[in-house]
Image (cartoon, rainbow, N blue to C red):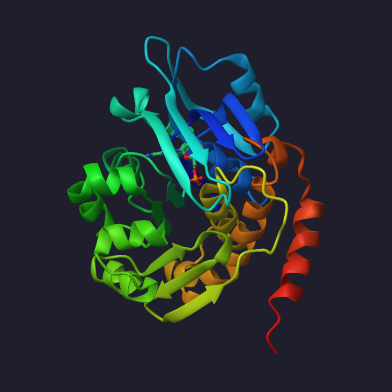
Length: 310
Ligand code: AMP
């Protein structure tokens, strides 16, 4: 069933212990769409400014399953830009700057041909932009949002209001604590469910994730890897793999209850985990751009062996 995403398309400058990538393609929408495209066609709704150049645009052409019809060019504006620096252990990231550019303007509108989208992912961006996309798809089967520290700090009322209308929320453990005031991931997850969603996925970086669902609790480790070059986009790729798998698995006509039940979400976590483990192997979208579906399937089999418990 068609999957649609809004979020940022970013021009990133990233420093890690392995080097620096200057003005490369990034953004929550970008990583999400590239990751999801290994499983299903995905439609993006986002704006970029006059500084979005051909090299950035060409990267999208490496992902034929990503439809860019909803990519709006605003020549007089600036593309969202983000700078980040990772410490030696790469679990700690410092944001050096966030320039909102087009994200601070009116939300981009989905093209008419996207009308039949039924899976909606609201990748990291201002909650008002997330809400705007959701209002275009009142007949969605599954709506899931991501959020992060900046939006919890600056737009909490809008975020809490959005939470009443989504099925799931994805965020990392620090953000879950920031949002709820609860240190324990399960307690924080339950608190999130009290605000509307049927499930919360709390990411714990290399240590995996915890699913807190109305039907129960599940956990999955990260894919154990030594090759970590640039963790940027891991969270967005995780969400892309997860949503891409769910959308691919449910044909038009699937019941809402089938799409969002605990088993469906729990199964999808593995797909997200595996795609994220590829994203971090290189800067920007470089690893995903050369990745094949066979490699994805191979690592999924390997991951299944790794997490075997009985
Ligand atoms: P992740 O590593 O999954 O948290 O995603 C990092 C990506 O999100 C980078 O490519 C940034 O361009 C983008 N990004 C950083 N901060 C924000 C923000 N506040 N809202 C939306 N996207 C962001």
